Length: 465
Image (cartoon, rainbow, N blue to C red; front, top):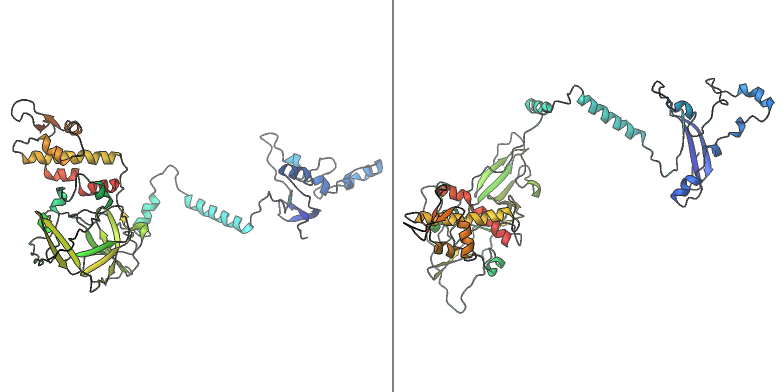
């Protein structure tokens, strides 16, 4: 029996066997609202032939013994529900009465308020539940040690994933470690912030420019490292040392390094399989081998495919993939050097040229007026004061020298910050100067560098920009 848009089909299903007992088709009645849905819905009394069971006279009463069900139960002596057959015997009157399942259910297949599930999906859910119970079998719910995960590791079923963060050491130059003012400005003007890391090239107009000869780079006895940082004279492009020209594809990167800060040129190579021993040869940078299951050095920003080599710019603040570009024969690099009011110009060839992709920051840029910003400002003044004390023979600090380094602060603000770790000498030797408190000695240079790192100032500058 098929239903159309003008009729409803009511099906009676045997709850024990699941077989369809009967089907009745009734004309569909218009429903305008949810209240009329139940008012106009055909009741079981309208569908079932209940008039056939009425006893009209005594002769039919004599023949009432014939009206019995298949299991011998007298249907005339019990109330009959057309929707749920014999509902009274399913009522639980006390705790000793067991529950009896329903024998028949009558449903409307076209009812929009009913949801019918597929028998196959029910079987799949039952299979998943059985599998879950099988896994939980024999597991103590009070045992929170997760021993089965450790057993899988011991058996070699799970491959450990090696992280690729924090394995390379970044060495800065000496001017960056000491935070010298020419490289790390104490105060930025509005023009400096608008041209952050993009200073305009001011070339003379109608003036002859003479280019000086590039000097030969001296061979260093020791390699640049944390124990042997470069001096200020080594941070230059005036010599013939190799240089790499990198252009950022982002218009405004989140974080940028200052002059003298170190970065590492890394070539990430992922193995094809566990037996792969054919490592590629690289002309520039260091080679870092990634196993098959190692995480990507760029996390969700990109991945290194098997058998491929991906160059990357690596430092303590961000990582960025590099893409090699072939320099044009007509391109060259112009270097402007200003020292003691004298300007010199140099020309160099471009040997290595790369484009940096999207940078992946490793640190969060602090919000204005946050605790990190307040701590950076406090440590900056404290480190500058300690270094001025170390220059003095008696470890004394003159207020005027510190005020010249921080012109954006008033003397009252500087005095309030100095009172946290210094005391004012009013009498005796060093009267009118500041000296460190007795319970707070001056830290050594290594602790001063840990107190305020170049990365902290770069994040502070990014916040101001």
